[in-house]
Length: 278
Image (cartoon, rainbow, N blue to C red; front, side, top):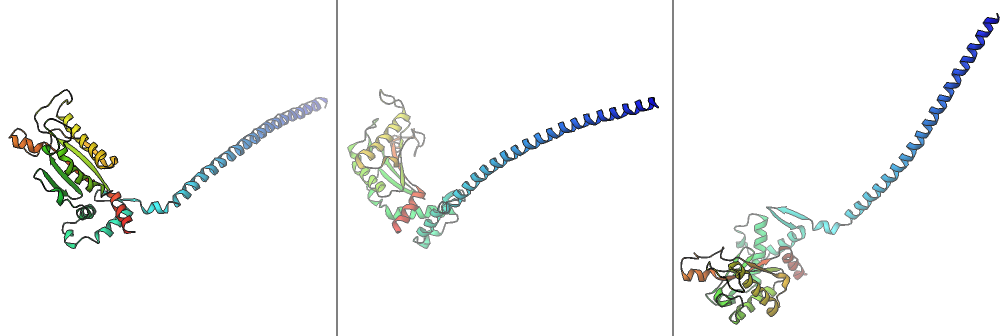
């Protein structure tokens, strides 16, 4: 009997010991879970704060975008490879209403219409007839571009890049045309013949063509008050001849020229047209 009691006591003690270990393990696990829960709450609050900040930025961008109603009306559109603004397109339509129907015969695209609108206005606002008073001056209007070609002998002495006083009359007339139209840019191109040149001041034909173009640009700016931001100086050497360079003396004289190219700025042009109508 005594032996049995001792055995039962051992079993009870052993059971008590196992239960305590389980309890401690459960307490430890519970503590870990509470710690992970706290960590998760902190992470959640951090993520919520970040989300709130991001949402605030999105709302700010949306507010900014929605406030650009007027700018959206001037958004760019593209058609036929030509990019213009909606406002420009609107002004262009107003200009085209004034163009005689006969001008529309070859108009097929948006670009054709744009060229027609600018060309028609240029031809009506720029009286170039007074410039065609010498065989050494030729004028062509191709779509929106006005090209005035002046022979070498009217502008410079041989192998020189100093503008001659003989050019004063023609440059004054050209300056008047340029200054009458705020929406244009002007490229002055120097062209030489193929006869090589090398002096203490001129390196070669490239150099001469650039120096001549720069001299004309400088004279237009300084003597005739053409805005410098409108002007571009370009040298072409002898690589764009009108006639065979090595053929005759007369042909080489034809190739020695300065070409003044008047280029309308499309957006400025239609903005000007709109302001003139107000």
